[in-house]
Amino acid sequence: MAKATYKDAGVDLEVYAESMSRLPKLMQRTFSPRVMRLDGGFAGLFKLDFHNGLFKRSYNNPVLVSGTDGVGTKLKVAQLVERHDTVGIDLVAMCVNDIICCGAEPLFFLDYVAMSHDDPEALEQVVQGISDGCVDADCALLAGETAIMPDLYQHGEYDLAGFCVGVVEQDELIDGSAITADDIVIGVESSGVHSNGFSLVRKVVFEMAGLSVDDHVEELGITVGEALLTPTRIYARALQRILSYYKVKKVVHGIAHITGGGLQENLERIMPKDVSAVIDRNSWDRLPVFDWIQKLGEIEEEEMDKVFNRGCGLTLVVSPFYAENIQRMLKTSGLKSWVIGKIESGSGSVRWS
Image (cartoon, rainbow, N blue to C red; front, side, top):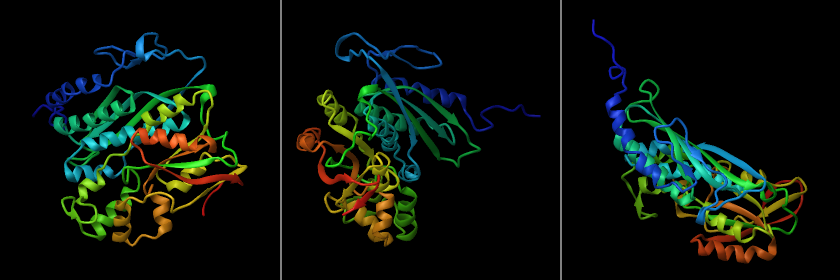
């Protein structure tokens, strides 16, 4: 009788070791001096207070802010294209963009990768993307876990989960409670579909329209795969610049990350019960990728609004006197923005004008 081995069960420890050997350099490029080295340890270590050089931090009443997310069925597109780095960026973006809505500075990121089988090349691509995202967000890729589970995933499939921790002084926490009538709503451009609504996207593009990832989209000038794998924009660095500049005046009263549920549902999450937001749906540039998807699937306007960001990936609710300068600062960070609405007395709702 043959003796059972882990390799026979679908997990090759030698290949797994090869995969793991490729990752330390991708993690270390994200480290700041606040990361405490613990080679071979079971956890990642990060100094909250730090007293040296450019990374100096000393908190009075710090609040830790955490967020976790995934990439959803956008992973299916990555697996069809056989390109895996962009979804790593998406993973960081989805987590970081959530915690910055509280005014938090991202500190560190953890990832979880579940794969059908050992694939050093695919894993390295994924973690390269995660590393790139962490560099963009100024946070450390501190630790992670890779699980090989052949009985849970079809060959070539994988799933991703991310977890981000940030910090904010308690008296600088942004939770929407400071939003008042006459505040201005600024919309900040997205890079594309980001990482929401891909079950609908895939149904429309691949099932209804019968397209493949290699087909050229004339309206966009790129392939289907390129259009759909554009990474989610990371707003952390631009937001930190604004919040640091207005550290004393506190003119940013609310921040909403526009994900599943669209602009209306996500902006409502931060609205106090005594005010409402009135949004001009024609006030920002709709990205062509959304027109293409809508046309392919004959999707109603209301459904598009519920599912997609439609070109506006983040909203800031700010004091009207400072709105123009905040837009200038966003432009300096390479981000297009628009005044898309205003706050008035109301009941916590968001409505279109």
